[in-house]
Image 1 (cartoon, one colour):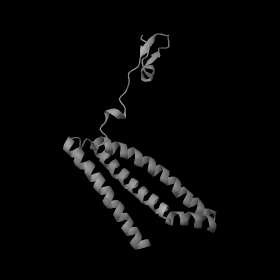
Image 2 (image 1 turned 45 degrees about the horizontal axis):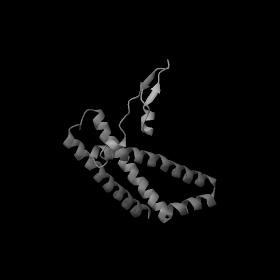
Image 3 (image 1 turned 60 degrees about the vertical axis):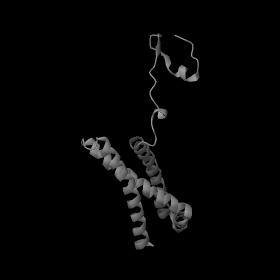
Image 4 (image 1 turned 30 degrees about the horizontal axis):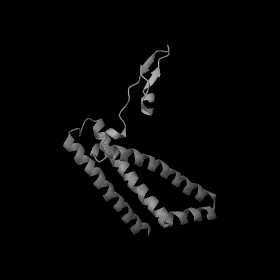
Length: 148
């Protein structure tokens, strides 16, 4: 076995349980993907929106605990939700929820065996982005009209 020439080379070397040297395969990482390609971009955004949506549940839990804790705690939570930062967070969570839902429906179609043709992948990807924008705005317009 050769002496590693850079730090990445050291990550590819290892030993079997009997002590013999072995070279591990190096998996491709983000540098091999075109981030602006529809399939890569939608996959990465699905993961990001899933994390954002999960973190958003913490905001909901805070709001519910504040509601159960009393008037003062609930007033603080309501103040934050109504602030510019709170509204931006809620708008972003709305967009994340719609994107994650629509991308999940797209993925469900793939699970059923539909939509694997490249033109179809690009058109459904665009539909997810357009649907996210339209449904996010529609959600907020309806919220403002009925609860504003």
